[in-house]
Image 1: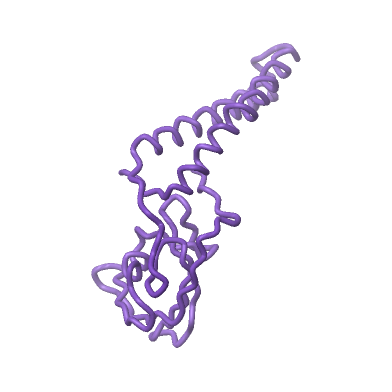
Image 2 (image 1 turned 45 degrees about the horizontal axis):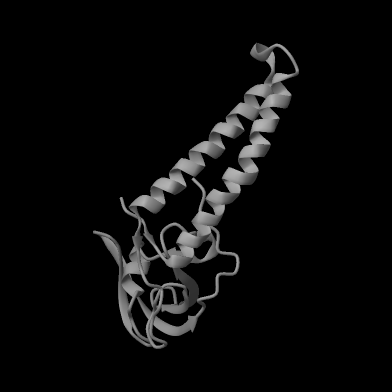
Length: 167
């Protein structure tokens, strides 16, 4: 599956790759060397843990590089009156008689616990491109869906504390 990334996402991924290659990799290699110096490797917990950390870092680098190679770059610009990527949206959920606030992000930043909703999610697909006071149907699955009304759109194109999700 090709990930949809904004230019900001790409920049953050490139920064993480660089940090992992220049800083984390050096630290991991040093930790392996130091643990190896402690003697018998078959019963050396520090060695095995350091090796595992080093391998995890290398795996993350490969994952991020593959993500960049296969990514589809999308524009995060949107009009002020429509829901776009990086906009914070207040939705009035009719069924619950409650207002909920979400920020629409790319799939690599999605974190429903933190109110960051992916553009690939049912909710994200339903509200992307919609306008203020639009009533949208959010289809969760074949048997269930619900209606919500877009009550507020806040342009939040700043990237404060937007981390790329780790796997």
